[in-house]
Length: 356
Ligand SMILES: Nc1ncnc2c1ncn2[C@@H]1O[C@H](COP(=O)(O)OP(=O)(O)OP(=O)(O)O)[C@@H](O)[C@H]1O
Image (tube, rainbow, N blue to C red; front, side, top):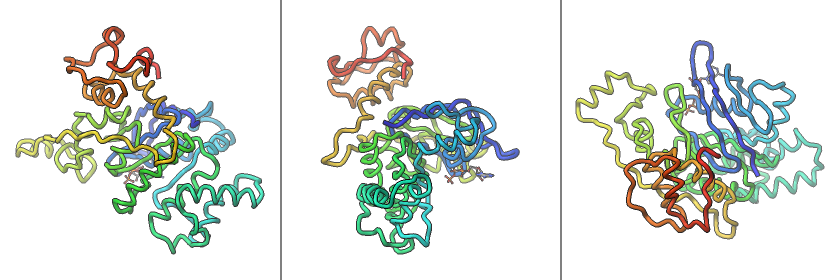
């Protein structure tokens, strides 16, 4: 199973440019999370900080006992072997065949024999649907195939954590949908902790267990997917609706005068509530995702802390749940304990509040 990534109080600046400040979140072990955010808000910088390639000035990133920000480089190098990285452009070597590209981390970081390397590479190529393309050069294949090759390469060292930076960039909608399914299938098969940076609303609404958003130098929110998908936070709602009206502008954030003028002209924040589409299931023939059961228990434990709409959306996905008459507000922990969750108690046993 994947390992948890715990980020606390992380702040990063380049000279006088503050990228983000005081970011705290936990990527739950084995679950899939997505980080959203307008361009330039520091999502790639965040991924690089998790893996210790960039060193934020303040805060910690704990992965299996290692602080990726402050520990000795030798220890960080070792801990980095738990990660598989999939970059925006696939980051393949143009002069190497796909086979050699995917084999590269094994030849670089292990002493495995070529026969063993061949077995691993072919297994990963099969997982991402690239069998038959071993001898192709990256320049001879489509963008979607390059992405899948990048993912196969990220998987060869059996990572416990997979970080994907805009895996959908440059893909058409059909290939984006296929990639979404592939990400869920990979999670099903290796149960790794995954963080996907994307602008793609379809991926955001169908793939992750959890979602967060970076904006204006901070983490606006991070939590169960239902919390973001039902959020009334203007910046989140604007982003999810892909609307030009709202706080996000072409220069990342509009000044407040522009926003006030827009509101005065009637371009209000009248976002439609997005219908929550079900999360993708593993492809036929695969077992259920182990993360789903763990996540449900975890989310039930934090239910009292979530807004009403998010609670309702979460409960609606649970077996045994009968649709309740809406309570006036999110109940406190005591109320929750008395009249718990309207789920079949033989199926779920909620944890005490705050327990992850
Ligand atoms: N090595 C670096 N040195 C100086 N500034 C940097 C460095 N890397 C990133 N930046 C700056 O940090 C900010 C955030 O960049 P980043 O690439 O993380 O944004 P992003 O949210 O991933 O954007 P996009 O969605 O467009 O890919 C940008 O202003 C960028 O210029």
